[in-house]
Image (cartoon, rainbow, N blue to C red; front, side, top):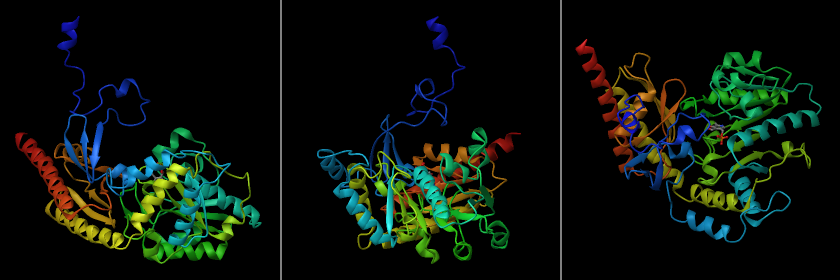
Length: 423
Ligand SMILES: Cc1ncc(COP(=O)(O)O)c(C=O)c1O
């Protein structure tokens, strides 16, 4: 019997560093098994076998300051030794100071803390509906956009366009409709008197770094103002410096009524924040919404640390410098591999390569080959592969990552050519 097991070749071959026992332990909601990471420093992580990778995923745009940045562990440990959690029945110094620092830095008036991007988006959409009620608006409809991703919980999922994420859970929350992203001509018909909120990402992250045009966001602002509807910016992925400014909206010359942050806000500690105008806040009242863990002393300690880094003199200038290096390198790669890469795009350090329809391989193949070359990447949209380095990435790490990406594309193209010639 034992011999039969040993000689059984039907079992899938597990790439080195992957957690073999995952499929028998976890609900099958992610592609399992996954690479098991044990350690990190800066833009580099090490797997369970001791292999090092350049990490251009950054925990999906969470680890803005890289792995194990100086000062973060000390900040978290010092706070954990005092208070970790108190609940929303009480407040704490970090929560109050983070609210002060965030409102000051962003220009918004009030803040609500939660734990994640989807919770923040659910809260923002609820607040917009509550505002509509408080102001006596007739409509409660929400307009969101094709390609948009806002999270996996009720309201956030209802405003998320991807059919595969929605279909298993329908019927979703009623009153949400979709308009085409970046289509100025469609706005008047889509955003009518019955709309109380418009929900949009300034740059669509999960769709693969697809940026709104300035005209589009400005038209959304104008339409929302004309109808009295609330404009909600989902800056869960774009916020906290990822695009080169604290909030991406600064570069479009548009301010929303509500803006949601999460991901990089806590530098890896789970936290979300809904920033809002005083006008929105005055439509809310005690008991209407809440969050047990929201604004905990520990999460807000980490977020204060993260915000202090992003707002420190020179930090965003360096993000923009790194972004220019990464953008130029990604464009050079696209030019070198025209059959495989349709476009290099993005804003700041939220960038992607969009694979062409006639590439000889799929995005998943590029991810796997890049990993073989020692570079971790993450997909976006149908055919894009995102590049999300930490915001403090060095030019040397960018060069090395680009060389590995180039090598991965070359391997895949050579393999396809060899197969073609063998036919
Ligand atoms: C723009 C955007 N909004 C919302 C979310 C949901 O965030 P979370 O996974 O923390 O719930 C994400 C996650 O990728 C996102 O990119």
